[in-house]
Length: 226
Image (cartoon, rainbow, N blue to C red; front, side):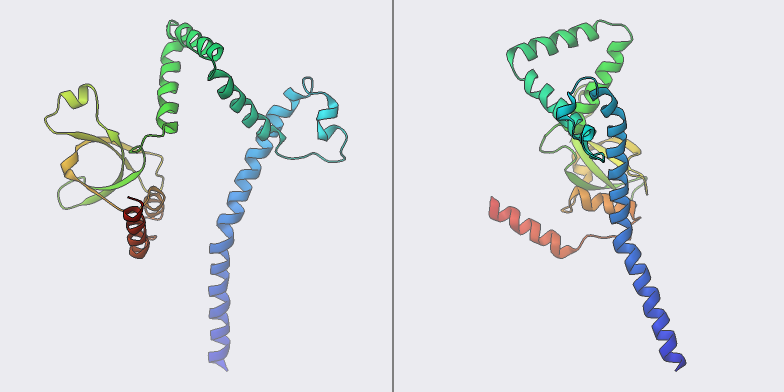
């Protein structure tokens, strides 16, 4: 009898933790998404009130507000800017704005820094933020996981003898902070895991390890595509 009761409590405990493991990431993700939607709605909707006629605003004749209108408006706004800047007039306007900002003493530093940051984050280069590597760091015999961000160029490459690459070495459990290292290409080991798997392994402090079978399957698919 005691064994049966203990077994029931063990099963309840295991199911409880399984429920947390499955549901917590889902609810937290939905909660963050809801916060973003409400943020854009609160910021954008008051601006749209005087601009958009009430007949085009569903919230004006419905008994409830439709969430996400602000986020959709922001998406349409940036998409429209991207569409307009691809034309001749758009290119002329964007080049004029860049030249104007580049001549302003303080604003040009802010603009150039932000432009380089967004170009790096949104660039669709083949080797940007797409490879996980191993590097002997901070000393020989100790390996650290990092991400290949590109090939070293400019003065850093000219002043070094070897072919260098840029490595971002993240910290655990926060992979958004870390170190930028310029490393000889021959000194790194390139891994087959995806960038997402590498981030998961870093955040979990090594508790989540990608399966070898999944990596072998990806390699087989790459060979088939080639």
